[in-house]
Length: 262
Image 1 (cartoon, helix red, strand yellow):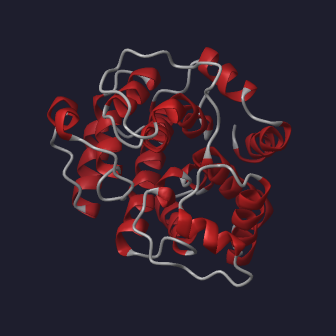
Image 2: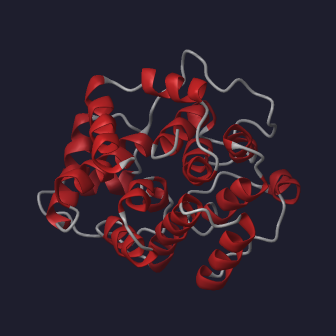
């Protein structure tokens, strides 16, 4: 199965390892405590925006606020919580990876790379209007869209390096020993893309991301969102992830699938 389930499952798999708890690929994919976090919640908020009106920034803002208030314990950053509770929220210059973790739905809705980029930028700038925050969302969305249309890994790598200036020539073995928890786009999105580039399939990609010992759920979501477009997500992982969504989030997911997925 392809689509935004890649980000959702990656988030859940990484949810036990959010603060860099492991440095190995040998860990159980799911446990009784595996759950959705802000990565999945905000991904589905973006999905609901696209379902309702992809041309309205006000609808997007309302969806972010609504989902955050419905799920106040999602694990959001402090500035995002303040933004979500504000009656007149304004962008707060974030360079964090929150813009990248939630962007995957736009790559399945846009009918061209240019449209995907426009939607990705809109999805980011209502909160993450720092250039690095926007770049993280754009690079992730580009990678998903290019994987979606059948572009090779080498071409995806070249595109991201040329357009966004990320260094994707490092290896996971080089990164892992020294990598630490990092919520910045510039310090986590390139590494997540490398996890996809080195991954053998969806599961291996997410294991790569979690094994860095960084922001496990978010990097699992980012790397998983790209791998889902390239490989698809195995049925058993899809079933585990869907079973962990509550009724509200599941209905948004199913509505998005019905409207936008083949």
